[in-house]
Length: 402
Image 1 (cartoon, rainbow, N blue to C red):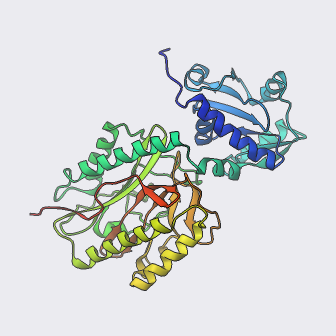
Image 2: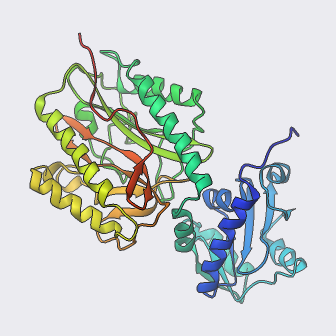
Image 3: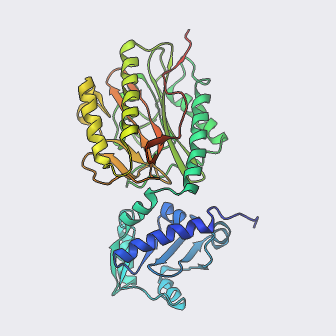
C-alpha cells in the first residue's frame, strides 16, 4: 500500500483526547466508545470502520474492522488493533489493562437504536450514558490547527464565488449553473461530502437558487429551500431558467481536509430593483452589528434576540430567516467537521461564546415571489468580536446585461 501521512498530528489528537477525558472525569464516566465518522476522525484522524475507546484516564485504543491498513497509515494514534466483531471489545480492553468501566459513554444523539440495544447486551452490567454533548462542546472550540484548515477552506470558498460570476448566463437553469459551480469546487479540492449531525440532515454542496425559487421552503433546517431536482430531494437547485434582474443565491459549503467554510453571496444578471438592494444592505448592516457583539461570554441566544429586535425595527421582521410561519429560529450556527456544530445562535440558547469557536453567521431575507437577499460568512470568535474568514465581495454581484 502506498505510504499515507497521518491526517492529523499526534499532538493535536492528544490535546483533543485530554480535553474529552477531562469531561469524562467531571461527569464520573469511566470511558467512551466513539463510532460516528466525524467524531472518529476528530479523535483518531481516520474514518475507517472502527470503535475508538477513550478511557477517562489512560491511552485510547482504536479497534478497526475495515481497513486496518489504512487506519494505521492515516491515524497517528499508537495503539491500533484489528477487530473482527464488537464481541471482542471487552477482551481487547482487558488485555490492555482497560476493563469495562461501570459507566460507558456512547454518542446517543447519532447511534442507531439497534446498535444501542446490541451494546446493552454486550456490555451487560455496565451503565450506558450519553456523551454526545461533551463531545460537541470539546469540538466547538477550534485549535489553531483547525482554524488554519478552516481559513484554507474559506479561501477556496471565495475562489469558487469569484469563478461563479463568469459562469452565469441568461437562460441556463439553476441545476445547470449548479453543476458548473460544483465542478469548479471539485477542481479546487472540495471533498464532495458535506457532513451534518442532525438525523435526516442532507446537503449536496449547498443551495444555488434564483428568483422566486429561492423562497420555496423545504424540510431542511435552513432559511432557504428550493424546488430541487425532485420530491425525493426536495431542496436545492431545480430546472427553472434563471431570469435577468432577479437575485441568484449561491449558498455553498466548501469542505476541505474535513473542515467546512459556509458562504453565501448574491449575484444578478443586470441590476436588481432598489427594494432588494436596500434589503440586502440591511442584512450587511445587521451582520456588522452582530460581529461586534459576539464576544466571549455573550450568550448565543442573546445574539438571536438582538437580531430579531433589529429587523423588526427596520421593518423586515416578516421575511427574516424565512417567510411567515416557515422561518427558522436561528441567525447562525457552529461549523467545523460538520455543518451543524455548537454553538447555535438560536432562540433560548444559553451557551456562552468562547474564543476559538467557529460560527457561520447568515442574516437573510426570504421574500415570497421575489427571492432571497442577504449574506453568510464563516467567522472565528476572538476577544473583540468575530473575525470574518470568508472575504469575497459582499455586495450584490451584478453581471452586465444585456
